[in-house]
Image 1 (cartoon, helix red, strand yellow):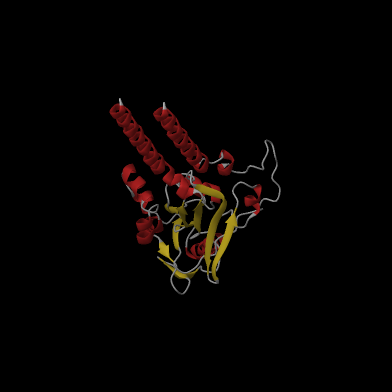
Image 2 (cartoon, rainbow, N blue to C red):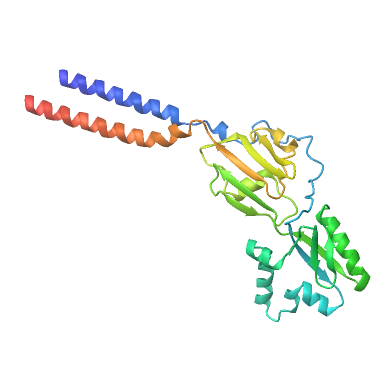
Amino acid sequence: MLQKKIQMKDSFKFLFLISLMAMCSCRSSKELTYLKDVAPNDIIKGLPNQVTDHILETGDILYVSIKSTNSEVNMLYNPESTMESSQMSGQSYLKFTTPSGAYLYGFEIDKNGEVKLPMFGNVKVAGGTQNAAEQIIQKKADETLKEAIVKVKLLNFKITVMGEVKMPGVYYNYNNSINLIEALAMSGGNTDFATIKNVIVIRPSSDGNKTFSLDLTSRNIYTSEAFYLHPNDYIIVEPDKHKNVQLNSQAVSLILTSASALVSLISILIVAKVL
């Protein structure tokens, strides 16, 4: 009888410890819910009117396409248009969508803020936007070519996502803009250990690094100047303060289970010896 009371007491202790660990390690789904303060059919006012254009600078890599009635120019700036095989043509486009391809085949802005283009020589583009660079090169092309069409794109629009996301890494954007939510989606979304109330965006500039803190549970993220990302931005999703408890809960539960089993085994042996 006494032995049964001891076993029951040990069982209650074990269940209490397990329950305590469960309460400490569990998180409310509200802690991982984006835009909690947005209701259905709600209209969010105060959104940025437009995306801030990136100002081109030394080290940026540009894709420059010039198409005209001059076949030689087309061959220089659009080699894919002369490919006989459609498969080779597809591969020629892909060469621009990798970091190594952009570095090898794109036009890099040098320390003087210029890109060196075939037929046109050095063209100053730093200090202006992508559209401004397109207009400058278009003007150059119009001076010597007939019915030229110029297209300029930024190839090194990269962002770095770190911390509590499923696939941290460096991601390249080939659209004119990308926002914070899209960047997190590219990295697989946040983990269960993340705190989305304090997502850090670090923006390098010539004056130093500017830091922003965004609460993804609030609609206010839409009005932050860091909502739309710039090239070379860093995004850091910080861990929840209870992460260590959550990570260790399984190990502790295993230890407690083993200890309880050991106590039960000793109790059985003691009872058997007494009998």
